[in-house]
Image (cartoon, rainbow, N blue to C red; front, side):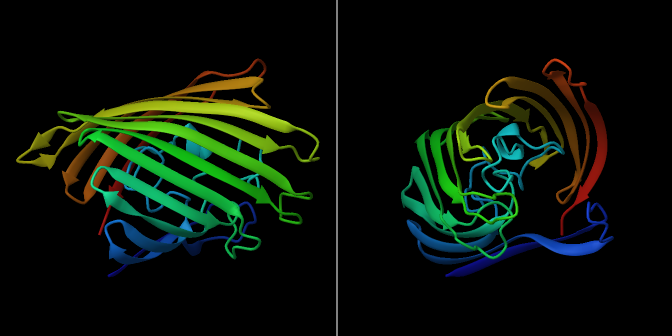
Length: 274
């Protein structure tokens, strides 16, 4: 009836120069009454109880994060992103086998205390077949002054459409996200869009994954839709054991606004789960 999860990490990458610290980036606790009715409490992203990969930052296979999760857009969500953790209470489940839903309330991004929690979020995923699903995401909230990044009350919305497709060894995910944020002076709305499409293939040996090549293309807007960024991610992973994975990744900004210098990064990383 009860389940829980938490992650502990330590790093020395802090703009406040606090040095090496140990923290808990994600934690959740659930009461599982029935397949169609579960209650979850979490310090994590809005979609921490979502079993699909479209909006999952924690289950991604790449160093780089999907653009729909990794951009603050107009900044009204406490200048945070969909991937950022926050206090979160949600009801979720599968009332019937091919429908997943989640509704909840949370604070703004990075709000560890849930002060003035008024961010409402809803998620619906419909499986037309076991290998093809379409979903909707809706987020609506207000960053209440005097939050750290809101000197006035600022409304924001996030509306998303996504799909997940499995075919043979392939998995395909795609998301379209429309965003609207009240500006810092509370005089106008900023509207920005983002989308990505990703596919990967799982090679197997003796029913265990070995090589996993991945391709993703991201595009997103800033500055009320006047600036567009495009990014390409190429990743090749190899599972040395079930719980040990190594990968090499190349990330490149293929298009940026005039006057912005393009960026790229090559990453070699080993991950161990236990």
